[in-house]
Image (cartoon, rainbow over the protein chains, first blue to last red):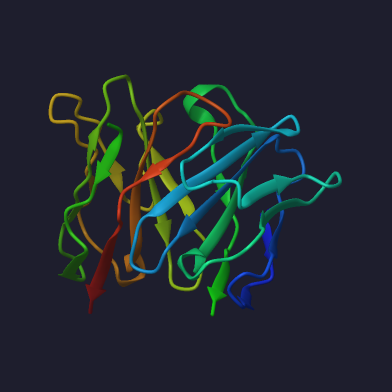
Length: 116
Length: 111
């Protein structure tokens, strides 16, 4: 069964550095998402992406964040200048865009980002 | 405000006991509700959705609009049910729309 994949599984970076988190969505899916989960807290929506543009973003997704689909398979999340509070598990998800409530978001295994 | 509340962080039961994981939501429109499960060291995966009214791995959930609840139930818990369970709300229908998650409940089923 096809799965969403994410690399790396764990990223450690220094505060102020740029990081790029990578995701390969399921191949026939059209909608892509990033969520994050700070340790001990809820899974929070960051951004959704469709047809090569952002569909919706949360207030967390400020100018430090950007997303891109650089080719036909990858979907990336870039954090320009990381802060300590960006430390979290970042989940990528994709969905095919089935009708209404039948649309299912499939999640990747996550990338744990640690900012020192 | 759009919100999902799972009041229990941990639910601990013995094998064979009934299980009910509570979920309440706050949303003014017609919600789409889901239960996701995360087994140890695995990814979040969809367990069931309200529209399907199906039973997956013996779990069922009924949407109660009057009580704004979507509790997850299983009559006889198994040890392999031990996992994190997340209730999620999708405020708008269909693709590209976000999921709003509750904080999750850890279910521990003891032998």
